[in-house]
Amino acid sequence: MPTYLDRLPVEILYIIFQFMSNCDVIWSFFDVSPYLNAVLNNYNWHKLNFKSISKIHFDFICNHLNLHKIISLTLSDDLKTPDQVQLFFNRFNLQDFINLRSLTFLSITNEDIYPILFNLPKLKYLTSLITECRSSQPLLLGQILTQLKSLENLSVSHGDIFDHNVALPLRNLKVLQAGTCNFLELRRLQMIVPSLVSLKINLQANHQLQLLSDFDIWSSLERLNLTLNHETTTTFIEIQRLLFHFYNLIHLTLNIRGSADNLADGYRWETCSTIIRLRKFNFIIEFQDPFTDDSQVMNEILKSFSTSFWRDIKKWYIAITTHNVYTISCFNDQLFIIPTTSLPLSTSFDNHWYYSKTKRIKISKIISSINLNQFYNLERLDLFDENKLLLIDNINQFIHLRHLIIHQNISNKILCNILKHNSNIDHLTLSQNNFHQLIPLENIHYLHIENIIKFTNRTQIKELYRIFPCVQRLFIHVNSIRLICQIINGFHHLENGIFQFNGIIKPISNEWLKENTRLNNKICSFTCRSEPNKFLIWISNSIVPTIHLKDNIAENFNSIQDQRSDKCSLQ
Image (cartoon, rainbow, N blue to C red; front, side, top):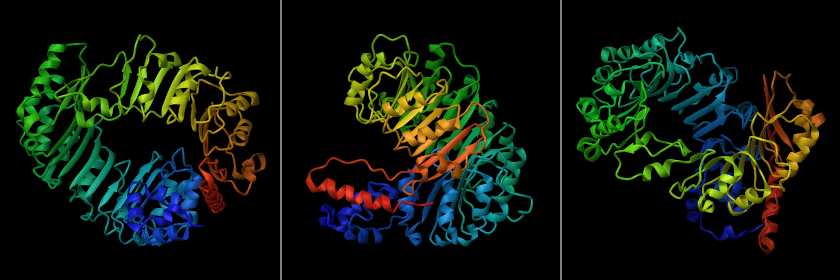
């Protein structure tokens, strides 16, 4: 069926695709028209990231993959997408991704990843392997890594990745994120990966700093990201002694803890020859003994980082609080609490960096008026009760605000007005259960109900899906697996459910769910995972909401969506 998009030249469509993820491109344009299919078949949509994806999108994309075009693949078994990895490799063979260069596994267990690892040597172009395991046991990759001749980038959760059968150094490995390492693991890493140019590592004790710089083994390092265990303290002399051996270093990130008198001294840092050569220097220095409120000491620290070296030559700006000092480049998505949090002292010329990077604000009980106008990138607002919303000037200005957290006193009058004028808010977290007076809130797609609220009967659940009929992701605490069935049957748009229990529950099988819920329908496919006190489910629904467009556009769009949903069954 022809569409208006068929009138666009290929070049314009390619420009549009550049502003979308490859997964969104496939979902949005495949099977819309023969012309768009032809455009997509010739487009290099070669990077796929399945983290947090809905299952209906995942199924559809898997039905339209062109395997030889994929060069980067990310799979995740986290709470939102349980058993995604197994589902994917039940359908595809890893060795068929002949041009794959980057492979990432998130929240995977050792048991699930080991069978996959044995196929890695068949990927002759693989240069990057990133693993983030849920298992507490180390992931032994030694035998596999010796066969990956092209691998240059490796990221693991634990430093103990090499079994004792690995003897030859892996000189092709240049970039390593080693996770947490003890003394012996660090020594072994130095022996096996001597040619690193980039290292990110978390050390458990400061005596490892000496080992890290021994023998100039990693003297070729150009980038170092070093974190010391929070209970470990260090000194400037120890850090300086370490950096002396890295004469090729150009990027340095430090997350360390120690005395403010010793480490929070900008004059001292700018005398270090390695620091002088750096192009980029990020640090967070936690104070061993936080200040109570000593403005004189804080001003002295600020002055030491305000020299021409820091502000004019290097343009490294720092901020200081009573408990730490950090480069403002390290400030990212921190929580701002009103009224207890205040703007940090900073060597920056203005506070634009702070307002632009603050995306989470919590407003406590005692406050008379609130002005948030400068926090224009606000994404999450945490309120003790909804009456605090009345105190906020221009609440409708926050175009990025998506998540409301309200701890008590929910009512229609205020909340519905806020949601009406902020249609971008689709995520709601509740900490109490007096919301039975609410009218249906159709724009809430993500609902998180804190554990202090216990759902014990069917009437409570029925009221819940009356108020939130369009919820797609739900976190809830229940006391019975029978309530899970009612939730699945009642929330018709549910894509991801995280069900928390007080105690250990017996595993829930796919067959049992099919017998007791709507999931026995052929148009619904799902995966699930039972954990000791938690049950996770990931559902593909073929229910597609009607989109109100003019004339035949809506008819064409819904027809396309219906055809697409029919092709999304992936068991």
